[in-house]
Image: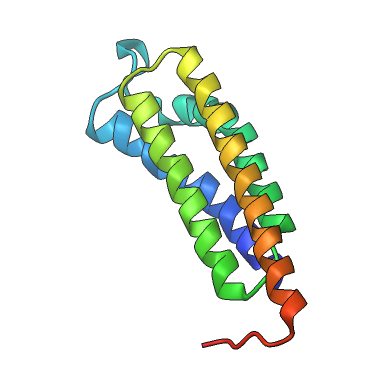
Length: 133
């Protein structure tokens, strides 16, 4: 049960990435004219480009502790943020420097979330009088 959010995160990344690329190529007609219906071509490229961000998010989920529902919410929000970034980067045909900025932004965000979650859990564990509502 501890690894379920992580497994759902990666399967959502792979399936959600396919949906995002399919919408962009088939419905919105984005992409190069030479590859007008090549969803698999673009899917492979964009899943590879966003893999470092997904691995960073997975590391955050693996280090995260706490109730199951909090980890599921974190997995869903992280996955949503990655897929939205993937959509807009492809849709706007962004330069590779934007992708590097996304790497940095997501990396720092996941690192800060990990540090903040660890501090909150440490503070909750120390008082002995915490009440769950």
